[in-house]
Image 1 (cartoon, helix red, strand yellow):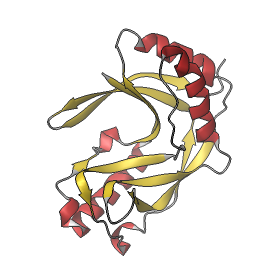
Image 2: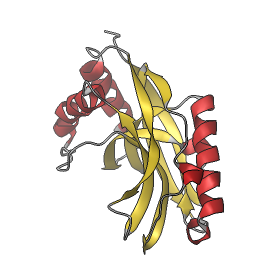
Image 3: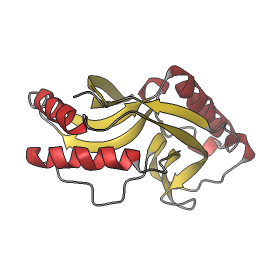
Image 4: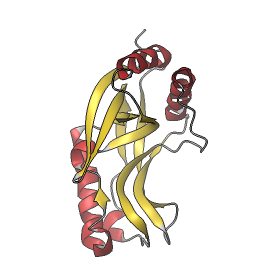
Amino acid sequence: MRAFLGIDLDDELRGELAALCDAIRDATPAWAGEKWVSRDNLHLTLKFLGETDSESLPSIRDALAGGLAIHTPFDTTVLAPVEAVPDTRRARMLWTRYDDPEGRCALLVKAADDVLVTFGIPPEPRPFVPHVTLVRARRPRRFSCSEAYTKMPVTPMSVREVTVFSSILTRSGPVYERWGRIELGVR
């Protein structure tokens, strides 16, 4: 199975992001048929672990709990507007970013990398960008920002734990399972 680390969003924020996705689909019909992240699957991405054996996932989770325990809870903010990645002419995905002025999310990723390397999971070579993926395009396409989806409120969020997710790909989209929550600041 594919596994990753993320930060679960509360219901209110999921609702705001789901409404944002609806506004984008309404304003840009060319994107309507792409792979939209379902409301229940919206999360702040931290680290993709790749293909992982389900038998080793509890050991990975336990090791991560030890490595992340020194990090205390913190607050962050979702930032509007939506961004096209890698750019607006050939977007492969749309996401909204999170503010991380003190680098707290990046520190979580670094701590996770320090643990995961012992399991043969290498650090991501690209710089970390805290974000919530909204949609993935099947092929690169143009994306033009519109007032319809740049007016999302700047929404604060408390980060109290990191979640270990598994992702099983199906024809109707990925199914996420929560394998465990790692509380921050708990030794």
